[in-house]
Image (cartoon, rainbow, N blue to C red; front, side):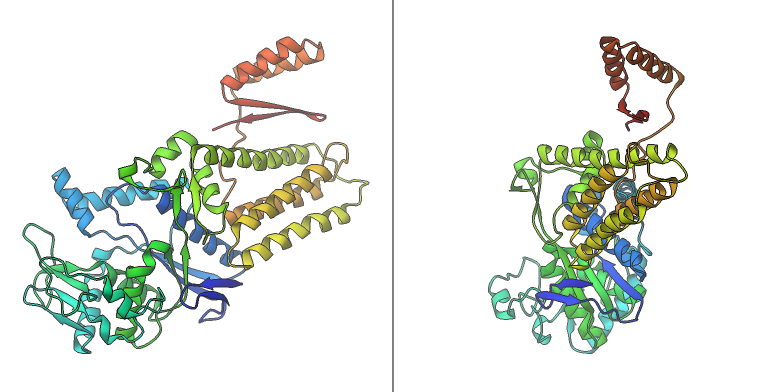
Length: 468
């Protein structure tokens, strides 16, 4: 598999540190509000990365943190008259609801920043002892960026260029504008922890370095997150981790592209800011996941009502194929006169196309194309007229579900048992069709549609699909 490595600026073959095992750290949410659709992209994309690596036989340890102490969390708690723990716990639970709705599997480990304070203090102390960090009279501890010669290697910007735009904020006592906080001295009424430099709380960047080291080791295989995290967050993680540990922090860095809304940057000021929860209430979670995978993860992606409706229509086509195939399986013979080996060879080629796409820097867009082409050939080759055997239908269904499962798609149960009154209407419609009373049949079909029941007539009988 080849991955575009932000660090080198080119595609590289994935060679894990330990053969057969991949250690991944993904930056998780700061839990002060519901996640928005921009947050959904890395969550879905890197869930697929994990799924695909496991599909290919790797043992994956996937760590995604929760930042549960931060200026935004404290601000939210003050606005609500509560405390940071109440806010963070609430929105961790809300995140888990949305992640489950998006069919994102829980991480191997979901560490919280506040559970790793002691490890952060140890890392900061090491950086101070080595001369890479310094404390101030106000209890702050800063990292000396000019002591790390490779600072800027991830964002590919020389330190001099970065320093040109840096400013020292009011209340900061840095040696250099580019220095960043490892520890923040306590402010009145803010949560704090005891440290060698006085009461305070950790800076944002040190949290991820510490948790990656604790749960994955000093050097990890893949670090991933949104493009907006390249600088300064990931740049700072590299600096403090490599200065502390004396070894490379991560071999591969993967970053997903931005998401726009109606071709404009998402912003509360532009009134085009959407949470995953709000979009899901209107359209469901799965179309959001489909949207996030429908373009290459490094490309920018656009959200609009029209586009999400197109995603719904695309998913419907995929569901229809599986539903038709499931129905055919139930009514297929044990043996068949068709050349089933030729059909298997034809369908198997789509698995190869799927794998080829995913091996090329996780190209989910082309992988989805391969899934649609598989659906097309299933629809053409496996029909009531061709009379495939049960074994072939089951094999094709397993292949279809296998590829969809790697993408985490088609996870909403569409076919359900229907109520007795609905079944009675369906039987009445069948009788109307047999009597060629098309007007009555259409009337019943429309009545069923209002109940969320879709009817599909096939040569082998009527397929009943209950939506939702």
